[in-house]
Length: 97
Image (tube, rainbow, N blue to C red; front, top):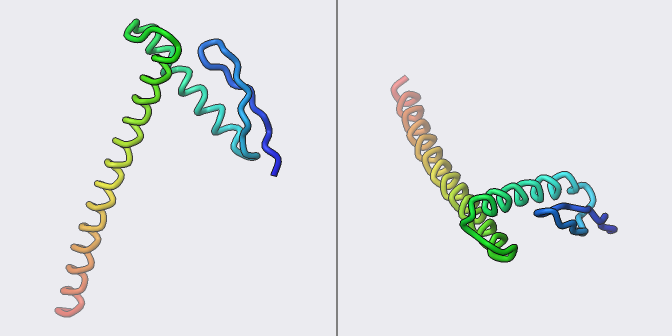
């Protein structure tokens, strides 16, 4: 399967990235998100140097991803508990009815 090459811009530098066909939009959105995160870090003055900015941006994005996964797992657990309670209540109602 041929992978198109997509040009992305990160902090004013252009990169050509191979991308699976049909995923070009997602790649461009990811690149834009990363570029924005890196610009914010550079503007804050908290990180100097492209490599350090990239690493801190990657760590921040990874932290957000892992936090979101944990939040989703917690919500799934609550949903399972509520479903179980509902099933139990409906089972008792069917026995009484």
